Length: 628
Ligand code: PEP
Ligand code: MG
Image (cartoon, rainbow, N blue to C red; front, side, top):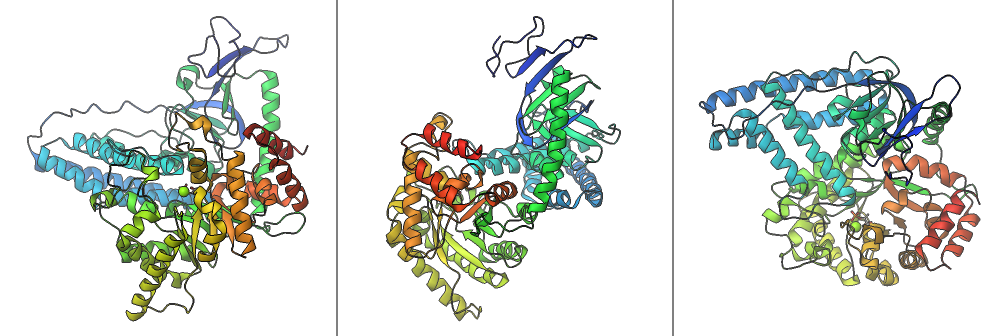
């Protein structure tokens, strides 16, 4: 039998449960023959750990009769009220436990519990459940499950709509997970069923479980558990974010895990490689012990980096900023040492909303974010609706793409949509301008292809500012800079013309790659053709960077490659100094750049720009990263 690493499983009778496992006969040490079993999953939280398996198995989910009709809907409403109250008490107890957690994880978990608490309040979820009981006569359990699942599905794109992709997909998965988690909690509380306890886990154990929910993660004491391995989940969900915040090495989505592990078996977990070894042999154990020591040293070093400046060894200063998808991620930004927000995606305000977010509501959110940045700049991108991004509010308001377009990425997306419906833009500009009293802000336009679009947007921007001043809102003499995303080939090629209209530029390599290579970023079918390091993309990055620099316009990169420590040296060599990335990438990028000289980066860029294939580019940057 072939496994994913192309090796045959070594021992007959020890065929892996599925393709991601491998049993191999380890060295015979003379005393016994060890047979270790290796599984693979999602590398979720860095670090290596060794410990005995502690299995935490949840009792079966309650059976729910979806078709049954309630004899007494009022009684079902009362049962729901009771279950909600019990759930609120549980969330409050979890909140009390926060004090025991390390500072870093306290903020991350605290904001998730806040989301749960809001869902259990007078929320859309609760209204929907009550409606299902009242109108469809469902039992409370069925109403909860159906409403939570409907809201989760809506987050994930809903029927007939393309699912969100990339970072949007991860955010949508997390939101869907929140609805499901509260749904599960309510159902268990309706049936008065017990929850799993993590109190009795032995010190130094590896927690092994089929699934770990974010609220479970909040219950874990990181001083007792050395690692977490789960059969389900994935590296971008809330649980994963929490485990990273708690600093617990973790591998999630390990297929076949529960069937393989026995309670107490020794397990080696490598959260960076995404491997789990059950009953490790001596060689594996020795390598793992070295990994544990290396990881401890690395954490210390990354922690110290937070306060160190982001500059090259040759002295040039860099700006490392964070991309923000949800205000709940603010604490991660604070921990990362990022100097501000280079991309605040405002889609979250629209994605989860039934109606268009109003000026006051938006202003409150922007003010919270800007104030949290404590003097560092926040770059707010006006909503980039369209393409693979979905918004219920905009669809309901009849503002979505007409639907006659077979390829929404090429349709009424981003700035095009906003210029067709200027009211959305006016509200957003007004909210941002009002919030700018809280600290430095920049405003960014998505999906620009022509200079006239920027001029039109700027006219609206100034009109909104005049209107606000007439309303008595105090704005500075100079408005916050209005800049653009350079994420279409047209914008990159016309960089010199656009840089005359835009006060700053940010290269969106995610879309730039899609449009340059004609490869849909949301399609698994063509995922193998999606290469941000394709020389065509790199030439456009170079063109637009040089155009901006010639006109002294600030330019940054905020696509995914800005957080890849292997790629940043190349971008520096092309003249870029500012990068915005997922918060957790900031320390690793900082560590790499502090060891680089500009001359080395320039030489790397020079070599890379001579070659014509992705493989050659990759080989050059890998060799550079390896110090060759
Ligand atoms: C990009 O396209 O690179 C970008 C940062 O924008 P988004 O991923 O939100 O489309
Ligand atoms: Mg984009």
